[in-house]
Image 1 (tube, one colour):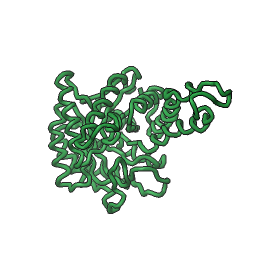
Image 2 (cartoon, one colour):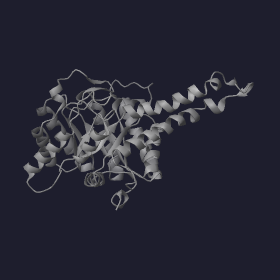
Image 3 (spheres, one colour):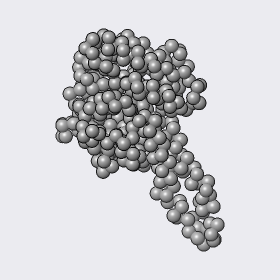
Image 4 (cartoon, one colour):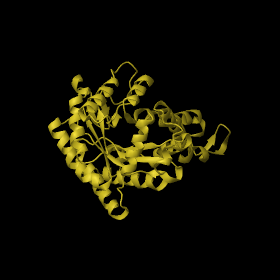
Length: 358
C-alpha cells in the first residue's frame, strides 16, 4: 500500500493531512517542506516530487509570500504577504493534481508581530471553505516560541478552535530555533532555550488535543536556521524520543509515538541526525537555505558558461551578427535554476526516506 491508496493527489486538507502524516510516522519517513517564492520554484518542487513518486510540502514564509505578490507592493499592514500567500496557494492548487502527487500547502513561521498576516490567510481559508467545503491551505504555523509558554499555548488554542472546524492543520513551536531567517533573528538567544522540555510538550499536547487531533509540534533540540558545517551546531534529535516516551507514559493507552513532530533548521544537518529525528516521530522537515542555494547554482553556472552570449542582444563568439535571444530568454536561464533545485529537492526527500512512496 502506498500514499495514493489513502489520500488523493493534489492539495490535501482535513483528515487527509493527518492520514498522510500517520502513514509517514508508521513507515518511518518524513516529508520535506520547501519554501517557495515564485511559481517557478513551486513548479520545480512539484516536478521533483513527481519524478521520485513522493508526497511533498510546499510552504510560504511571510517574506516569501510578499515576494510572490511582488516587491513593488506595500506591505506595511502585511497586505502583500497576505495577497502573495493566497496567490501562491491558488497557483499550487491549480497545478498540483497535474503532477500526480499529494501536496500539503503550508504557511511557515508566524511570530506575534506577524499575526495580521496569519489573520489574513485564515480569512481567505474561511471564504474558500464557504464555497468549497475545505480551506484554501492545508495548514498554518504559529511560531510564538519567543513568547512565554503562558502566552504561546493559549494563543495557539484560540486559533486552533477557529481552524479545526475548517479542516486546517496547526503547527506550533515551543522552544526557539536559533539563527536568522526571513528577518527573524535569534542568533543571540540563551542556549538553554534551544532545547524544549518534555513537560512543555505535554502541556501543548493536552491543550490542543482537547480541540482536535490535527496538529504538530516543532520542538527545539538545538536547531538553527541557516547553513552551517556539520558539527558546528549541537543537535540532539534523541531528545525527541524522550518527548514521545513522556507522552506515552502520560497517556497510558499503549499508543507509541503519539506526537507529530517537526524538524526546523534542517539545512546542514548530518544524515545520522536526520535519521534519528525521523525514527523519533518527525514527519516534516523544513528545507530552505539549501534549496535557495541550489536554485542559484543552476543560474550562476549558466551565466558563467554562456558569458560570451550574454553581453549584448546581438553578437557572440560565433559571429558579430549572431542573435542571443535563445540565451537571455528567462525561460532558458531560469529553467537552469529549476533543474538544480529539482535535484536538491530529490536529495532532501531521499535523506528523509521519502522516495517511491506513492
